[in-house]
Length: 224
Image (cartoon, rainbow, N blue to C red; front, side, top):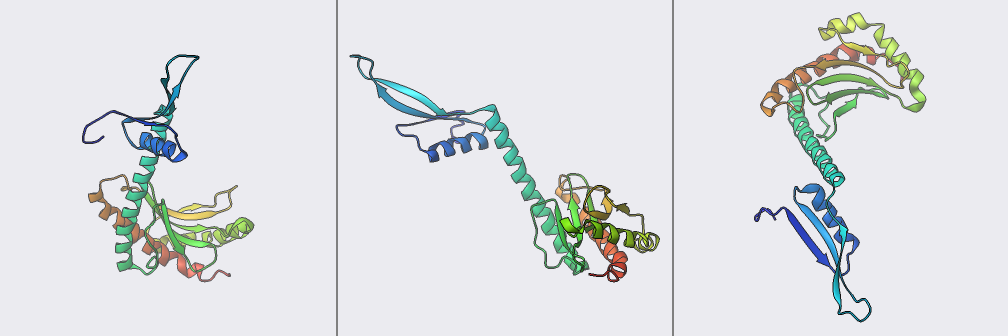
């Protein structure tokens, strides 16, 4: 198909099986060409000579093409994020042991325990921005504890921000289970050109080092 630059392909079978349908569906979702699966039968009406009957089992559709496009975009996004995280972790390991045992992931966040149940130091990555955060979530039964931990830390907001070196966002997230303390980094995200990533990595790692340093004295005083 690629070598011939064909735009349409037809597969004719006598007994279409589920694997045939799956193959043609996948081809239609993952290619710009159109693929058809046809069933060939011989029929006779009365005393007429046998004649071929072609039945379309599956073919291209706009919905299928959109599904394929979406799947491709997701796969591309996963690959790019994993590549981004791999480079960030290489740098982070030179500056802190915090995420030293974490492997690159395909998702938008990467985190590790802050040393207390339900507390996590996370890197978060979006298309054109990033963030570092302390995420507080002790599970479905721990909503009250989450708010209490957040309030205990926020009582030391001035000291924590002074140690961090700049203001932080304190999100109690009313009506939700979890809370977070975060710093958004606006210089770029995974959709920016790869040559700009080192600058983003440096800003994220620097912010994470400062976030850990500023919060740990108060996290260590929390009960389990």
